[in-house]
Every structure is written in C-alpha cells, then in structure tokens.
Length: 476
Ligand code: GLU
Image 1: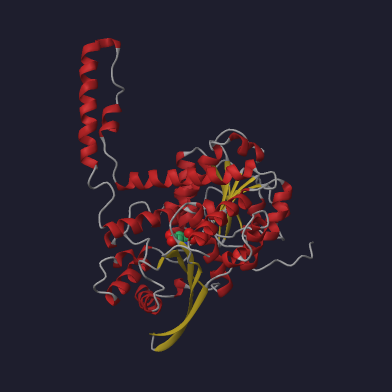
Image 2: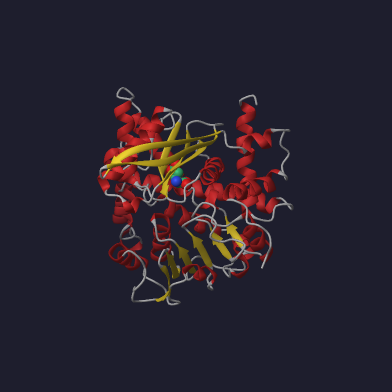
C-alpha cells in the first residue's frame, strides 16, 4: 500500500498542468495566470416543490476568458462541488484550445440527484437555475454557453434556452446561448452521440499511427481489439456501440452502477443498453457473467479500457493492477495524477480526456455557429453539389456505353456519388477532421521532444502554448 495522499481533482489537473508547463518557456507569471480559475459563482436558490421550499446549490466556474464566449457543460449530480467544477472548467480551457474551438473554458454544476424528481419538478429547478445564471451573463450567446454534461441532456438544454429567450426577448441570437439542444429547438444533427463518435474517431486516428500503437505494445487496427467500458451513459454507450458495430472491436466488459458484466466472447452493446433502459442496471443480463464489485473489472485483461463515467476511478488504489495497455479517457479526469504516474512507469498509453472526449464540444461549436448563422449546414449547397455530380455521372454513363463490356461503373457508385452531404454528414466530417488534426498536433510533440514521454503532457503543451499566444496577443 502506498502512503501517498491522493490529491483532489482540482489539484490533480494542476499537477498535470505543472508537469507540462515546467517543460515550456513561458514568460514569468503567465503560467500562474493560465492555471488559475478566473471566477467561480455559487448560487443557492429555493424552489417550492411538494408543498415545501427546497434549497439547491449550483456553480458556474469560468476558468479562462482568453477567448469568449467561454464554454462547458452543466452537470447534475450529488457529488458536484466547487473543486470539481473548477477542475472541469480548467479542462474545458485546454480541451477547446486543443481542438481549436474558439472558446474559453467554463463548467457548471447543480448538486442534485435528478432521478429523485419528476420531469415537471426538474423543469422548475432548471429554469430557476438558468435564470440565476442568465441574470449574471453566465448564460449568454456571446459570453458563456453551457451544454449537457453528466445528468443533463437535450431536455435540460431546451429549458435553459427557452428561459434565456424569455429573459432576452429581442436577442436574435438567443438560441446560441446553450448547445446540445434538441433539433427542433435549434440543435444540430449528431450532437447527442458526438462525444462517443469522437472517441471512435480518436481511436481510429491512434491506430493510423503504427509507431504509437507499438508504444502500447499492440499492432494492427481496431478490428478484434478487446474493449472494457465503464459507464454506459451517453458517452460510453455510443463509443462502445460504434466501436463494436463499425470497427470490429469486441466489447468484453461493461461496468455500471450496479456491478459489471463480462464475456470474453463479446457483448451486444445495444442489447445491454435496452436491458438497462428496462431494468435500471446490468444485473441479470443473460449473456454475460455479472460481478457485483464492478470496479474490479477495470483490472480485467483487455486491449482498450474506456473509463466513461466519473473522475478519479483509476487512482493510487488500483493503478498498479490495471492491465489494459491503452486507456482512452472518455470521462473527464478518470485517472488521478498519482495513477497517471504509476501507469506511465508501467508503459500504459493514455489518450487524455482533453483530447479524447472533445467530440462533444467540437459539435457544440458547430451548433453555436449554426445558431448564429441561422441556417442549417448544407442547405444552400447540397442540391447544387448534386447537380454538378450529376454532370460527371452523365459523362461516365456515356463512357460506359461507349466502352461496352470493357468498362462499367461500379454498381453503387452512381447513388453514392450523386448524393450531396446533409447536415449530419457535414458534422461527422468536421468532427473527424478535428479529431485527426488535434491528434497529430499532440502526437508530434510526443515524438519530437525527448523530454515528453506521454500524450497527456504533449496535449497540455499544445494547449497551454495556444492559450499563452492568445493572452500575448491581448497584450498580457
Ligand atoms: N460537457 C461536455 C464536455 O465536458 C461538452 C461541453 C460543451 O459542449 O460545451 O466536454
């Protein structure tokens, strides 16, 4: 047993930041300026429910305003506290910088167990929270743009957007005040699954770099790789589903609140998802072995471990026993600074949170741009693109006739080529491009610098450098 005390989440993020900053040549004082959270607002408000007043505590922390608006989700959970919100806000700053989303970092939270409330009660609570934040410009299309996080989703974002619009009746850009809204309330196609999709694109990009794959002691592609995922919420579910259905990976373990299920032959992610919707947990799922002590499955044999639930789940108490050679942090902060050190020494490759789960904020960025431009992506050019493609297809058909048996078009070429891209395809293409480019920036630092031996430090270096450049451009 180790005697070292586990730092708090906030301290953990700072330690990781410091590790990278120590390798950089920042002007005196700038390091400190970037590291600290600019402001954290705490609000306590009362809502009358079931005949009595309930008092709730919420936070919105702004880490860095080197770019505005600042961006980041709002989570609903009992564990929400200032330290956590500040750590998450800091991660948003670095995440946005890494994927070149033009935002500063922010995060919010409400201390609540949403499962204990009826929908209409949650609406009342959410609207009141949104009112408190909007009143102080902590929800605002040009200053602070929240999004979903743990315990919140499209429904909450729609309530918040509507609350803001009621308070700002002449703001033509009101819809851009939050992202992650449902499609009919100004959302964008592909936002719900964006973080999970981003995990898939991140892993695909990782496996396009054989040298990096080798560092994790693996070879080949995602096909056949054994995956364990912790948390089958929005992020974990989509990541596991896409990897198993589209990339040939084998999901062998799923860890949930009520234990874990394991099957070395592979688990049908969609079937488990349906099971959870119906039964509230994984217990009793027929085609796998259930273990009540779920977190023990983090230590099972696999190729890729995807912690997609809470922060701090891989810590000093279990890091030594983690067998996965590759961890992709779908959650924010699932590996503590102490565990990170242990894993680094063991040679485990970690694809860090600020990159891995950036798919959500990337598509949020697209949604915000869509809201500000007041037009769906692809609306102007889709049919024109199709008309131009048709010209080529017609020419090819002419050639086809001319060449007779010597050549013919592939059977589905025409249909595939003719189709202009719709919003969802454009969103996916933008996300894919973002994940590739950000990976390359990170990986380059990892390879080029002898003093950088992990992707997390590389990611911090890229991000801190970009934030520092913005501050310098502002004259700081
Ligand atoms: N809550 C998500 C995150 O942690 C999304 C933030 C956003 O879309 O602004 O990245």
